Amino acid sequence: MTAEQANRGSRVSTVLGRKLGGELLRLRDAAGLTQSQAAQALTATAAKVAKMERGWVPFRDPDIRALCDLYGIDDPRVLDRLLSLAKTDRERRKAKGWWNQYPELRSLVEYVALEDIATGIRSWQGSFVPGLLQTPDYARSLAVGNADWEDPDEIERFVEAKMARQARLSDATPLRLWAVVGEGALRQLVGGRAVMRSQLARLIEAAALPNVKVQVVPFIAGSHPGMTSAFSIVSFEEHGAMEVVYMDTTSSTLWLESESDAARHNVTFDRIVRNGFAPQDSIALIEGIRREL
Image (cartoon, rainbow, N blue to C red; front, side, top):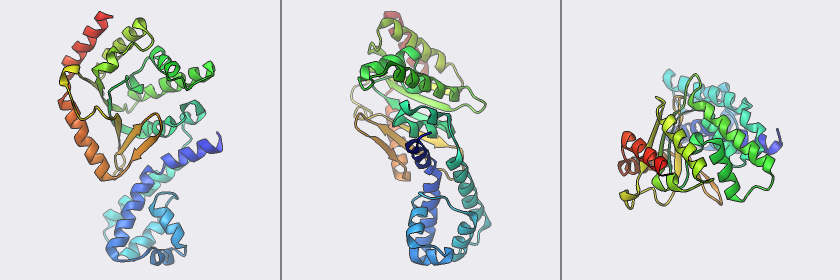
């Protein structure tokens, strides 16, 4: 694993760290104390406290106890929750995930690391089928069409990594996936008719899984809130873990980690869903498009 990959993994594993740091920051503000005062309680520098509150470095249990004492937190349930978050965060930072073997994932590596520990994902994609539901031929055709790949072996490794992600849909604790897809993604002939027939069959097959829901926003829905962007809302099991919104564009990868951002995108997702067909009608539409091919 390269230094760059290790750094990416560290950044991803601070999702819980940022949540923990944010909670301790709010507790400090409520107590009317400065970072310098918190640093004195830890025999540390204010700069280190700033890094801890931003999730850049892990919290040790003695640090959390000392800060809770300083902030006047005497509820054992609050302390236990913070300690639990800190323990989980430290474990995540040490994890060496399979995705680190695939530099071909590029900016997706951070998302895949989160996907691996998530319990649920709600995804809206208007222009192509979500990665967790793609067939190898469809994924390969997307990569070729992207024109960002020069080495055929690199494309194959990228496709292999995408297929490995799909194990989450059928493992011991399967990921709950709610995929809402635009009709245009189903009609775009990625790879040709044969590839699309197989891809549409894969969607129908996946929708039969108890942990997967597939819905389609049809052309007849007209204008709707999802037309200007695609996004995924990633949820976690850990108590106190915030939802993370992931957006990937041709020029950048964007993570939205505040509670307000998550709430806003949850509302947007619900509005997109209201513009879509019900699951049963969505499958009927997919079957109809497949027959047309």
